[in-house]
Image (tube, rainbow, N blue to C red; front, top):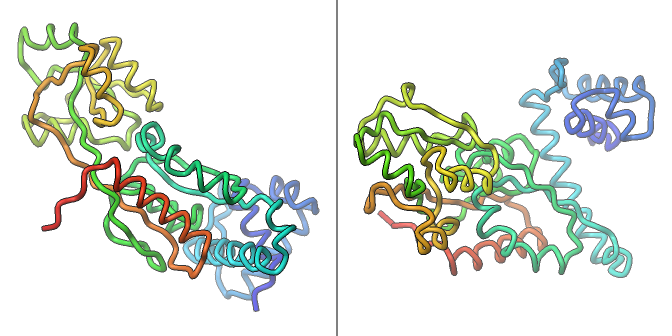
Amino acid sequence: MIDNKQLQALVAVHKTGSFEKAAEQLSVTQSAVSQRIKQLEERMGRALLVRTSPVTPTQAGFRLITHHQRISLLEHELLAELEPDTARDTPKPIAIGINADSIATWFLDAIQPFIRANNIVLEVKVDDQDNTHELLRNGEVVACVTSNATPVQGCHAIPLGLMRYRMLASPALKHVFEQHQDWQQLPIVEFNRKDQLQKQYLKQFYNTQPNEQLTHRIPSSEGFVEYIHRGFAAGMIPDEQSSALLATGELVDLAPGNYLDIPLYWHVWSLKSTLMKSLTDIIVIHTEAILPPQKIS
């Protein structure tokens, strides 16, 4: 058996990034946290943490953290069955990994009834859709929305649909662009350095050299759209977020007919969990109604 206090210490160090902050969170001394981690590492026969700043788990450490998260979730459900009155009033923490565009468009509407019905305390971890599955692999979340079709070990993946992205700009920027029609000179905006949609689009349709593109970065989904709206740069915006601005002519498509379809998948732990099944069902039903289906090859 793995000592629960030792596991809690490992999780706390991972979440806070230091032994000192973990001790504060657990209301124990820093020495006690260090001792518990040392005992757990001796029990496992390997290092579980890399003593950097911030402290990060090793691969074995991440596996133990994931194990702890799963056990905690199942314990919540067991208590809900044995003590329904108490469990109903006890908040249930759930962490989900997701991309910013999904939050800005469909995710909050999808999850709202689940949060209200189950007294959920939600923690959302935002990353690029190509990277959110790493949060699941590392035990930081119980489920994620990702563009990666391959399920993480111990999880299963469900297709949600497509998000269609178009290269949009303000009418003023389009007018300037039309004077030279040089895609290599078009200023673009990215969400962050992980966001490769703009350069993928330009490479695919116009064979531009990505390293030579003038690139702005705005790490906010709403700010990203507003930056384009103000004419500073062009960028890839999903249809769910741009339809109203296109209809009014406040944004224009620089190349109608050219777009990128990004498939989204729901990755979730393979647990016999009523709570996780309910969450999965809500996400799948909602996205089926609003996202174009993926093509089956």
